[in-house]
Image (cartoon, rainbow, N blue to C red; front, side, top):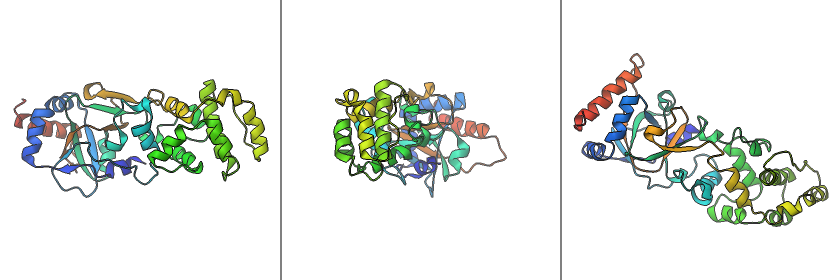
Length: 300
């Protein structure tokens, strides 16, 4: 599961008990009460964590853990369709599943600042966000590592400038420049077919796998008029649109109640709550913790 890597990335800052309660009272009391009233909690497992109180401010830029950085750069810095989604490269990744979070370290309760917008997808793990998207699945890309692999096999470095240059390149110009140099023509066919799926709004128009450049040239010629002015940016900005990927952005009271991965790029505070006793009811235990917090800041 990719979530383990996200949950273990260090993006938190130590804080004092005094500062924690000050922030809680002034910035987080509405969200805290909502959690208590609706039994909906956000968690993060943190390996080797010792501090009782932590805070997150979104200032630290992070790279994707244990993988290339293509999709993080695409979503956070380059695609306009993602401009209203919390930035993945400045985000705190969490889960609404206590059992999942506790597998990855000390469990912390996440309390976002009031009115913070959070994002969530249709899968338990963001790594699987392309599953069910035919334009990618039909080209053997079901997980984000498949997208990473495609960019890598096409010779693109996982740097913002290189990815931006690729996106701003016309598809046929890129094809003509790389077709005699690429190691595996199948990867070139895949990115062409993804582009055709965008052009025709369907995966039915496909270039078959070919063994020679000459054979591939003959197939590409059939679609030259459709592709001649198209850039890769148009393709990926459209096909990776958050709405198509079933990504929702909402404030906590309107957030979809599921065990999907959740992320935010605005401030939050974290309270160590685990490990909790397996023999007691989790909700009852958290109710007691949150009631105590609300009492302490004078909100009950």
